[in-house]
Each structure stands twice: as structure tokens, then as C-alpha cells.
Length: 278
Image (tube, rainbow, N blue to C red; front, side, top):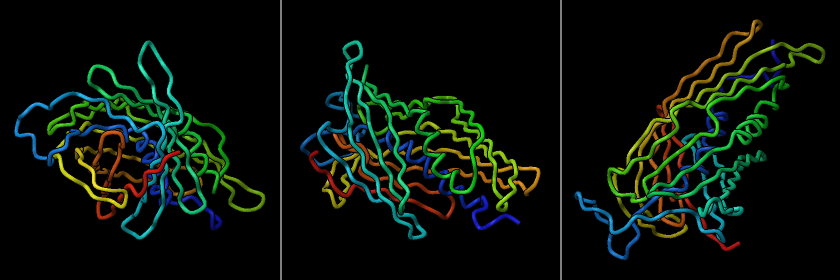
């Protein structure tokens, strides 16, 4: 029998959170109509102008993440630096998620061109983040990745019907493991994770109030599919498949104001708590 640190499908939740943390940095760079009037549905009217919506360079954004089972965690996002590439400012974004004593740091790149905000999630962070989880119960022998960097494109206008699209290839991480079963013996195992983003739309414009203030936002909706499989010759195969529905509210110069992710009867709500100067 495996020891108390044996792998379990409960790690599926943690794995899902790791990939969510990769997504947060990317999807936080979204769009919203920015005016001084009350926010109303578009009714087919074009936006006043197209704008690029990136976090402010000198701000730190703090979030609370609350799961339906009562688990709490936090997230801090900021622009680390910007670099010029052929006349386009490329933002380097850092996002730190804390759950208990565990910290997961991810980074992404973002820029705006041709009325589109482009975001890329970096594969190095996927590896490092998964290491933090896997090393709690196993040794890592090898890692294979595909589908990185994951790309996301949002239409800057942010009006109802605006598109949010993702790279067509799924993210795949295959980790070869050595799992201790006692003080002297280990077994070989393989942990496969596949994450597939599905394109979505902006469905509404509305005001959202959080502890950080009231914001005029675009609401986006999309889904992603996650498949996790843990297999070995020595233990039963553990496998799970989830489809996550994402509701995401964003504001210009902020990014994420609020998000709700739902998988079956479980949900996770992320909400902006504070904006502070660096």
C-alpha cells in the first residue's frame, strides 16, 4: 500500500489550479468599453473607438480566490517590465498565486496590434508550477510538453459579441515519475495532463463592484476541457475529465475584476480586492 503521500485524483484540483494560474496572467489582459456614461448593452452599435487594455505598469493588483468548498487563496499580478519590439510595447506580466504555504509564480507576454490584444503563456512556468505539486509525492524523471506557448487573442473593442480565441493546439504535459512506496522502494508512474481552451464571446457590459471599487466591465464567457491521467503497472489507473465554464469580467487598465469558474457542482470565484501603487 502507498504511504500517506500517495498520488490521488484529489491532485486533479491542484493541477487545475496550476493551469488556471497560467490562464489568469493571460486572460487578465482583456477589454472593456471605457466611457463616463452608464454601461448599456450594445444594441448593435459600434464602439466609440478601439483601445488596447493592459494592466497599468506602476500598479499591483491583489485578488481573493474562494472555492465552493471554502478553500481560500490569493493572487498578486503586476507588470514586471516592458520591451520594445518593432515599435510595439510588449508587456511582461508576473502573477503569484498563494494557497496556504504554496506559492506558484507564472509569467506571460502581452501586446496589442491591429485592434487585438495578444497574450502568450510560457511553458517554463507550466513546468515549474507542476514541479511544485508533483514533488510533494514523487520524483520527476522526465517532462514532455507540447502546445506552448499557449496564445490568446481578444478583440479590443470589448462590445457584446467580441471574440476571445485561443491557440488551436491543446496544452499537454507528460511527466514520468518515481513514487516512493516505503523507505526503500519506488514505483514508476506517468502523469498526463491535457488542457484544451474553447473559443468564446463577450456576452454583456455591466458594472461590477468589488472591495477595490466599481468598474464598468465586459463579461466574457468561454470553456476549457481538462483531462488528467495517472497510470502505473503497480497501481490502479486514476483518470478524470472536466469541462470548466468560465465567466470573466474585465476592465481597461485593470484586467480581471472578477471571474467564476464552474466544474460540475464545484466553483471557484476570483475577485479583485485591492489596487496599489508599486
